[in-house]
Image 1 (tube, one colour):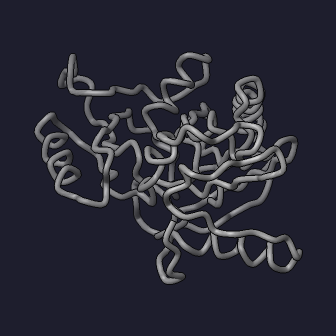
Image 2 (cartoon, rainbow, N blue to C red):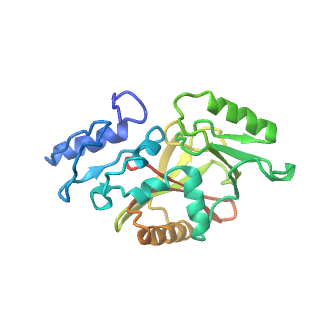
Length: 248
């Protein structure tokens, strides 16, 4: 990735680089074209993937899973449509999800429009009709930054006021959860714009249960790292939303 140090997506990766330097761990930036590299078992490749380059990374054929962190299996469920399908296949709770406009009825609305590779709530909006969905999709198609124009539609989950979400970060057997709280009168919360970390490792058995269930399944699939977003409705039910990129 091109790191300029001034964009809101850069700060996490710059912190990682600073940590490596402080611990005297040698590293180098790989060029965009790595087709001629012959990686060995002594190499460790860290993939700082995101919305703009996930499909590009998955096209590479010379990565070895034992040398790549996070694993290729982790990368494969980064996009929101792939993540939700993974959860459906493994009996993990997600909001009701539609992957296209087929078979939608007026009774299904309102629904959240989400680009499958979006981040920081870009193009995330509540749609009240098929017309709203088409309008939002056209805006997405006009954005040259988004190479992947796919989207999902999900039922809106009311988390109460203020709007909250939880994120569980896991790496191997290490796990930490934090609660993010919206600081604005908003329907969603994102730390990039309007949220703050409200509590570290909150005492919430339901959140622990759903995150542990996901991690247990993930380990069997060689999914070795994740920043897992979870929401809890006003009645206490929990739903998985997405698996975020490594440095998030």
